[in-house]
Image 1 (tube, rainbow, N blue to C red):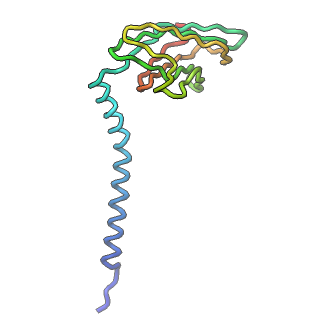
Image 2 (tube, rainbow, N blue to C red; image 1 turned 120 degrees about the vertical axis):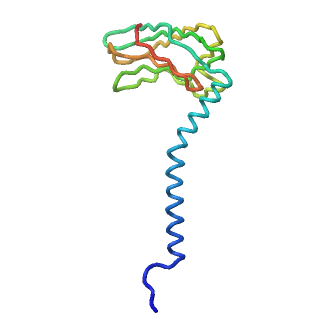
Length: 149
């Protein structure tokens, strides 16, 4: 008797490949969620870096922003290391200053209850009235405020 179709070995191999592919898809989907959940739990258990932008100020020359000043306040219970300052609008992000190594050389370290004023001279950013200032800490906390507010 002649049988038609695929052999049992080929069928098992195809099922194994399908199972591995599906498991990789599921792992990839949930990996980002589990990673962010882990960071959230670590911050909840160990305290988190929490700060706000109290105010921002800027100077212009012609149609360019030439300097920016930012007042930060750490209202959390953990020191904050600042990794980056950005000026952005709906279409463009201008990195004002970014730490090359957040662990050893952050832009500034804020202790709990501390206020720090950051000054960034010698900028050349096209002036617009709808910019936001975004400050990011080394552990991912972010604060935003309108430029000049």
